[in-house]
Image 1 (cartoon, rainbow, N blue to C red):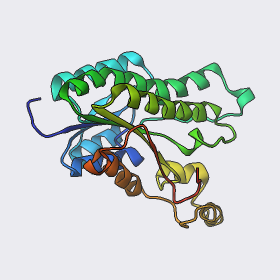
Image 2 (tube, rainbow, N blue to C red):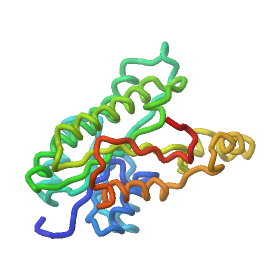
Image 3 (cartoon, one colour):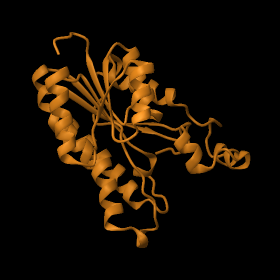
Image 4 (cartoon, rainbow, N blue to C red):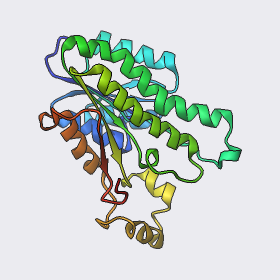
Length: 246
């Protein structure tokens, strides 16, 4: 806890994009704590193979979030960087969406970042520095079929970003990083990208003619948490190869 090495916290930080973000922050010299919900194997690999501290927390459960925040502050210290990356999808047509489908996604994707940031921000303010990066989604800006809960949660996250940027200024900067199509196993499975024809169809919609890598997203995070973005807050940074131009 007395270490002078800066501390970073990444939710959903043990696999996919989240792992790439955790690794980048580690490589930038941060002690990195990756929060995970249920994938113990991914958490074990993150700890054993990559030297990342892991901590279990269910972002959809307020008590679990608050307990994780107490552990972070009590055992590790005040984060300099908080990355709210964890998120879930439960896709169904709007008329078939259940109350649980709606609430589980909103609790994890929107309420989770709210509760964790609220729990950690006072210490960041007292420390006189801090950066929060919320990981959004293009569907927070552009609707899609069968994802009203997810799209609403990510649209809300963008407004949460702007409001927190106002309220935590000038000490803590808050921005939203929005990945486009990014090569993870989840994306490959979700969009059937093992099918060459399907992959070609997706690539035809991206001006750069490639699907992004997790490192592309980590590069953007490095900018948002570093000194080159010291005058940037309350903004969205879209990293999608030009697929959607807002």
